[in-house]
Image (cartoon, rainbow, N blue to C red; front, side, top):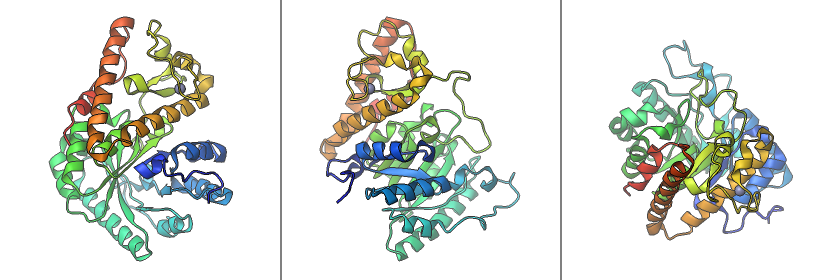
Length: 359
Ligand SMILES: [Zn+2]
């Protein structure tokens, strides 16, 4: 029996949604999120340490540790890096076994520049890792951290490379800002889900809920911008420089938006009032204040976990339609808000992609 009571049958973890948590948030915050979502994914060596702390505290819920080798600029599958020295890496399978994870994630370097050779090399390495994991009695995931152009410009080859794999593939999409902003991103990800056996999305935003609704077996939502996608190693993240206001999830328009932008939506007609247990009816416009960063993150978890429960509680055959319906309504609210306030909010392409999404 869990000391934290996080294993109730209603947890989102059992519906295939987890929180992807930066280790720097610390034990208390990890416990808080785990109590809401049920399961966490923690990256890198610092993630191993954080996972040990959670287990030592008594957390016995679902936990994944992502080796996140791809975040290390010196370990790229890339001709610019002379040699790929993995000798200094710990045994990532042993580490994950010790932590009682429910699936083992392969340590994979970043796959840059539409490099198909590197993609095949990563699949081979991931498959070997999964075979070792299977021998130890643990299901494995082939982690594929790829530049988004694999998805937006080379989708046919990308699906062909993944389709024959017997092991599930876990995607990490790299982009300086938002990998879903491209018109082809959502339709092509759905094509990937349809054309392959088992796909997992790591480091996603709320779109994770849509991917689950459309048949991905598991998806993890990042608690911070840096864990909602991967900034290609060696690049600088995009976003508004000098703007320290938090980026938070706005359920009514299905988007992460900076507090500074929400602040400008003066005449929102109540569209930004939030009934979650953090906001208790207050307006999201208050998050223009950078000091409310922690509160904004807690609001986001509350908001997306409620949304996930609403969509994923539907019978499997009706989940995709529930998500499409949510996206269409959010699109309408967004247009209405833009008309009313004169402020344009969020990327159009992801919502359009979802609204027309095929199962
Ligand atoms: Zn709220």
